[in-house]
Amino acid sequence: MTLEGVERFQEYLRAYNHPVTPQRLRVAEELFGTHLHVSAEELGEKLRARGEPIGKATIYRTLDLLLKAGLIREHDFGDGFRRYEARPSRPRHEHLVCTRCGKVIEFESDAVERLEQEIAALHRFHPTRHRLEIYGLCEECHD
Image (cartoon, rainbow, N blue to C red; front, side, top):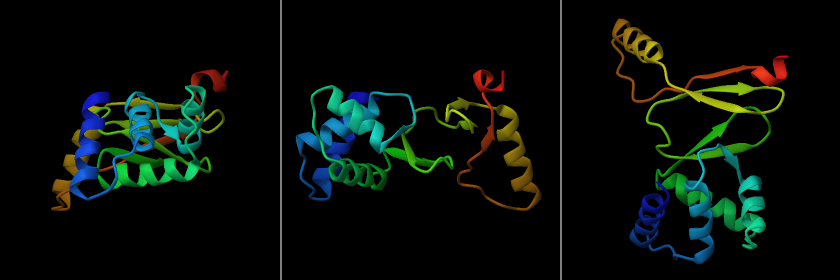
């Protein structure tokens, strides 16, 4: 989604009369170029390592614009900072979060989808989205 995501971001910026700056595009490229859940700090570190000295304020403002555009998702896994992922990295997926090392594992489950439908039907509810996060220890930390 790297190129497509950046193009959609440019379209959004133009449509809402926001400047299309090289710094905003670099942040978007970095985020769309990974399949990981990254923090604003991690984005800054990756950009600096590539020789792109982009300030924290620019990164946070760009993340806010990407959120408003609906191009990324924001997650709070309870580790003191927010993480971001490109949308859709995978259409419907859930998360396993290691409380020791912070590793996040994505998974898909037909059983979760079926359970959502069953519960919604039982309560005559029409869901638009859901989020499942399971916290514990990953394989490396459990040993």
